[in-house]
Length: 437
Ligand code: EPS
Image (cartoon, rainbow, N blue to C red):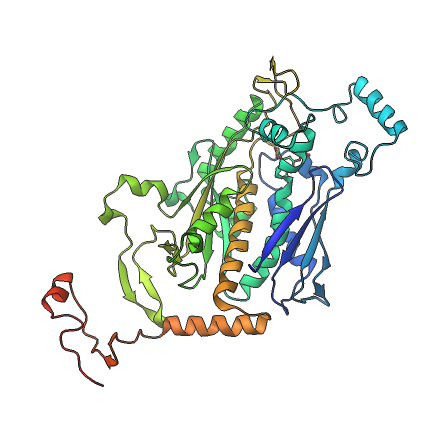
């Protein structure tokens, strides 16, 4: 059973979001304060909409923790939707009484937008496919769950994964790399991590950020939206997470699926990503310099983004998510009505954001954290933090030790380096002059 398995629940304007996380080892120190920082980071960013002014997201830990330490039992977190107060009748869980139904009808007749069923499906959103799939006539039944509000529950869960991984020396961070076609210039990425965190778009390049902000303002004044690219970096990941032996054990595949699962993400790349296709191999592959200080294997570059053949290679894991522009436009695109099937001039408009790239980056971190936590536990095993810590320390220690010379049968071959494939062919290499020890 996979560790750090999680399932979220909740509608955007329902009473609460929730997430259950299963397989968290016992003995991890955890309080609600550990979870609040990333929840707040997810709410920020230039281009966010009015909803974030209503919410002050905080996760309540309701199970799996006692006296500030995890028990090994499932952890249940709740993130309340403050906005529910404004939607109590529309999102009521209990069946409507006749009086309530009559009041709702009256509200609709009076032009109450919240109460009115949504039928003019939004291009680019889950509306049409979701309604047809589940047999809904009111698209609200789709958009409430398809909303990116759900990512608050993922970020809450990832706060637990962050606590867990920080105990093991693994850290995950993200920044905004591109908005509306304006990319940061790595040579101009002068901001420290703290400065980047405090900046409006969480972008390390101040000049590019100013132009990104201008693109968001341009979109806002046109009733439009813009996307972009976030980059997530995981540091301290030991060599050997994931595996090349089966497709579903490849860590790059797991991370790609996790990042791709974020509502607004339409593409994922690692390291040099698609740029690799435009270069010769000699300008792509990371030259291995050898074992350096403290036994650490060093690559001259990190174009692979920390993963080779689906296995972590000791370099930082670098994964980027391509964020499409939000599909809810203040100046809606033409569309069609779900019930009549006829074209309509304007799709439904529901209060929305202009750009969410910095927030999507925080959700990207969350998915990377949760995936790495699972991959770490698969490698270390352990039901308690003591067991996990010991196992991780042993792993790091073994990785830093010299690799034993290869053996042939029961004999130990002398470690003579093969300088080229030719040497092996002519018998002058590792197996050429072996001897007993
Ligand atoms: C979001 C909450 C939503 C949207 C946005 C992201 O809240 P509301 O619909 O009440 O404004 O602001 O989600 C979408 C636009 C979407 O289409 O999913 C959040 O908390 O991230």
